[in-house]
Length: 116
Image 1 (cartoon, rainbow, N blue to C red):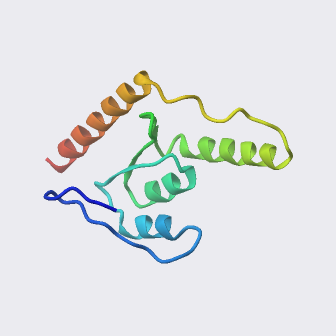
Image 2: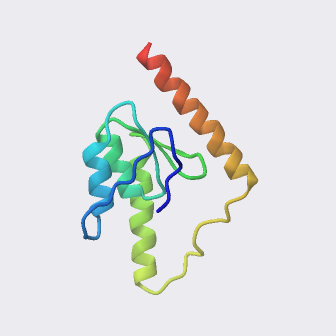
């Protein structure tokens, strides 16, 4: 993978395993970090560590909504396992991009205010 030069970007290669990347993220995430993921179990684990978590369309995952998100995910997985089609996620559109950028901006400013 090519990484842009400069800045604070770093490539991390994790070991094999189904959740190796998720496990690495959770082991390194801390309060004050912002995690962007559509993986709801990963979002729940990052919230437990005190991180702020946003979905790719700007939906914040919080302590108050993560339980419902996990339950919905598990129900849809069971339905797919039983052969029922759920239609999948909706298409990512410009409004989603706008919501994401606004939510990210809000999360960054909230963390800055919290740090004083």
